[in-house]
Length: 104
Figure 1 (cartoon, rainbow, N blue to C red):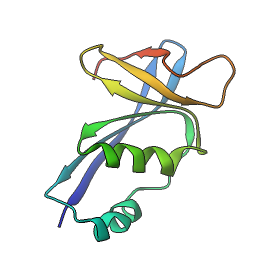
Figure 2 (figure 1 turned 60 degrees about the horizontal axis):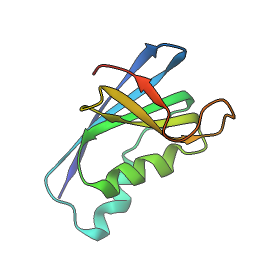
Figure 3 (figure 1 turned 90 degrees about the vertical axis):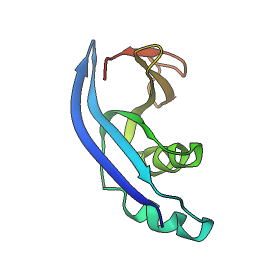
Figure 4 (figure 1 turned 120 degrees about the vertical axis):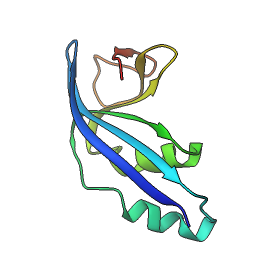
C-alpha cells in the first residue's frame, strides 16, 4: 500500500505568494486505494499553490482537483526551468503557461 508523505511551506516570489505542496508517494498504489490517498490531503486554501514532488501523473491531477477552487492560481514546479508553470488561474491577469520564477 502506498503512503503519501507531504510537506507544506509558504513562499514569496516576485508578486506571488502562497503555498508549496511538496509530496512523495512511497510504495505502489492499486486503484481501489486512490480514494484513501485523496483523504490524506489536508484542507488548504489561499492565493497560489505550487505542486511539486515524486509520484505518478495521476497524483498531480488528484492534488490539483482537490484544490482547484480553493486557490486563485495553481502551478506545477519544473526543476529544469527553475520555475513553476501556471496550469490553472481564476484571475484575468495570469494565464496557463505563465511562469513563477522560483528555486526549490
